[in-house]
Length: 316
Image 1 (cartoon, rainbow, N blue to C red):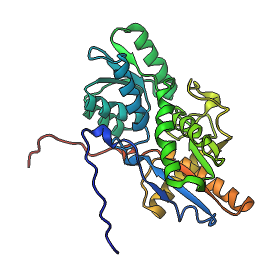
Image 2: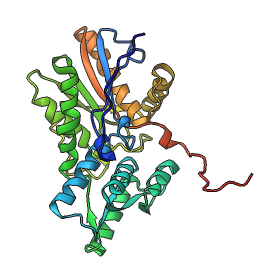
Image 3: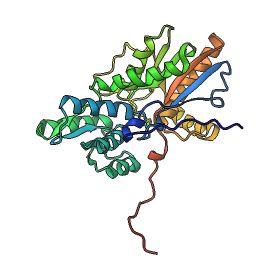
Image 4: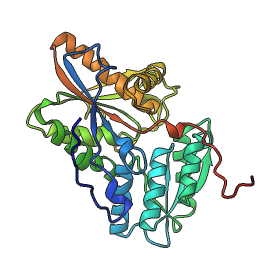
């Protein structure tokens, strides 16, 4: 194999590493649709390990530029984990204080990662999921308006704009006219809304699909079953061309297949995305005989594990 020298980029700070993530073609898990290209955009290649670095960075930078987030205020928001990790490392890199409200049952890894950046954690009821965290953060901000800047990822227009200017533009730059379909799951809905709007501006039509949990009570962490949830203000049900329900077991099974067959260790939301992409590819194979489907790898699976305890000092 001939080695190809690629010039390394120089960063002035960690925030320069957000975006320009790679696309990988999924050959094995999509072999049931051999005439269709299925691509996965590896958002875990962002510095914070998830797709949420994109909106996290844009929301924090815009708040600092407008003066809404100052040195005497603490950025606060509700999160199930990945956006919290993004806020935490970005806050540390840009010198902003961060507090997070999250359900008490989010993974230990996410709690440990956010705390490592000096973030204050406030826990909501584990029985109320992300909606409970939203209600709690609203109460805190109402009680202490002078203390907090409420970033509100569920209503902040910079959430989808990060994907409009970033994710969608990068997909078109990489694939151009080859892309026929895009699918991603709904959480805050920022990825789906922003990327879809950018793809709609392409000269060639791109069919855009929103995947969401098939059941109100599901095990796909970070995703929303919109009919039974607090609907984010940034979500517009008319933007996607269709909605595709995904069962919890299908998302989990596909995450395992991606590890075993593609060497990709990803979370269950990514499993749900890839299951939906393969489902669309199989449909395209039957109806058109070809096409190109793109979806998103939201994060890696390592942050769903309980890590080993990190001790500052050891006694041998």
